[in-house]
Image 1: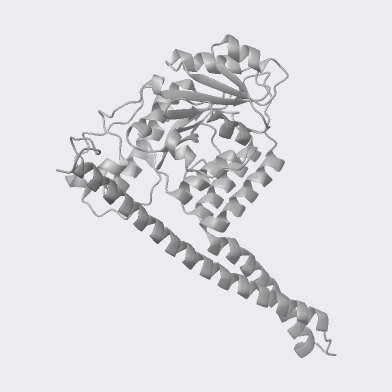
Image 2: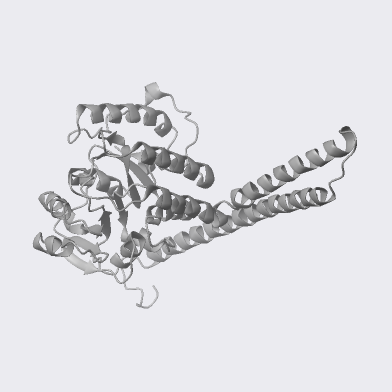
Length: 389
């Protein structure tokens, strides 16, 4: 099963009257611990699914599948000689022969090992994971992409679970590492940082993707081309999540297993530096996705600071004896309050404009779908260049 990320209404259907025989919990490739996690998530999801269209939200027991031949396994790498061979071999055992390695200039023989194991290898023209992912799409010749890190922390056996939602019509799939995280797979600092980032994303952008920093992704090529991605480094996962929320890309979250890095392999992640980049990317992207938060947060902070200064100046002038005037502080307090109020007003106006823009986009998409449907109905069964009937 997988978790749906689209907005949910409160359940109104009677659970006792629903037929759940058509749904299955995928536990064939999971441990007993993972099975328990699936069952708990499935029970919570049943209540939410009761209020929704089953076609839009669930995986049926007889769901269609995507052939490995329709998928390109994308592996961005940089000095992953210790693990890249095992990663490629694992996916080839699962039937994925189209493996594309985009290397960022490794000096430890990563490219040679990848070639020996049957992968296509491309040396990226720039640097950073984000740039590698964007450039990789120029070499993808199929409709679906399965993106995975080359450090051996993700299981190739979970690939089928990642692709199931795409077969059901979803456009982007995120693997939730926290569903079954093995001991030692993530440091305590990284866990805290990931949790904070996920909560911040949910607050700012309004969608709960559980694990937006996961490197295990599956998506359609068409949906990827709709995303406006500019990040060069580890901020690429954050940008992808933000853009999915912004453009309404149908996104599912799948529980996966996350393993420790094998002995002898070093991480390229710097928690403090990259964590700061990720958080700034979250906030910067709020400008066009949630302007009320983007401008309102700074406006609120400025107004609050101005009020504190004004309270201090007032105390010094009206309460304290002898009176002390703080002309400069009074001016600063007034400026901070005015600046904050203006930002709050600007945030409200920007949010209204964004809402109107989204309504217009929705209407245009509806007209486009209606026109396409009428066109297909008009020319059904004949060449559109034939003479009118």
